[in-house]
Image (cartoon, rainbow, N blue to C red; front, side):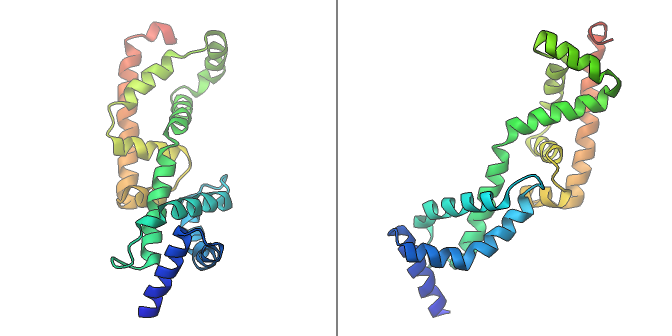
Length: 197
């Protein structure tokens, strides 16, 4: 245990000092572990290797915060990696919101898809999008995150890891959130039905 602690100190201090050998040792020892974590968070369309490199860079930048007296390097790396990955996907919320708008609109009005696209091209905006944004705003931050992650293709198991809840809870919350959004959306629609039909 003492040897491992000393090794952790040597690697972390070497990285702080800018040692190439320390980084090589660090990368060789932990890349597989970090890669596996990235695999849990990545969607099929994403480049896991690219995400791995981003995490490694982040860890190098944060290495000065590692305290070998409080725990092992591997424990610290796992915690920092998971936090980075959660933040990384939260920062994609704007893109996810656009995906949500499209997915929900298709769900509400699949027969009006062509007309909707035509109106979008002509006007450059959408009243439907505004109503949907208003409907989404009634949700809690957690439920909005669940909708966004589902729109991006994440499984309930992965979402449960993101948000520290059970997969069953994520699934039930998603179902309730969708129903709530639909109710709010249709309520807003009824106030301006003449503009939709």
